[in-house]
Length: 187
Image (tube, rainbow, N blue to C red; front, side, top):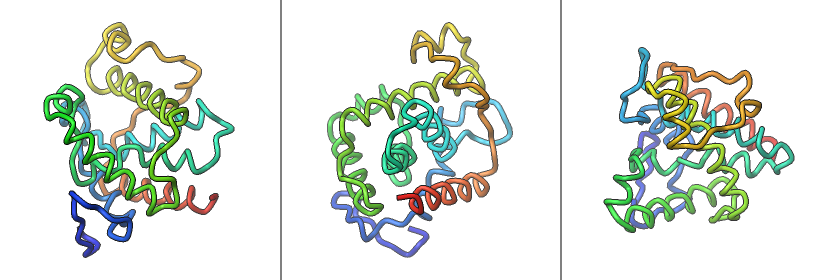
């Protein structure tokens, strides 16, 4: 990692995880395999910031630790990349197990339980689907009807005032680490 840490992907430990490495990696991992409109790829870091914001709107009374979990929901992708669901399924259960081990180490590193409760995980997944719908319609060329077929039609009130932004990776990396620090300070 850029921090100098060595991360064993098959046996990750919390002490080998740094937020700067996560933020850097996610800022350079493109969602939609880079097939989005704009001058910059829409990164997993930018997506994670949006998911955390949407989660806060869906579950406004949730403890801060679950907002942190929402921000970190795709954190393992800083080293394993972003794959679309059909590819993950084709790779098989090994991918899911690797993702779970990395997520557990990341959660422990930042004071969260290794596994997020199922109710919270469902709320984060809902925010993730809303984000995917927004991305599909705003930057990936989907019509609202087509995006709704794949991701469900989100409540417009949850998305009110939110717009997909494409920023340079260095800016997104800074925004991600800043939001992470804000959430940690509130714990």
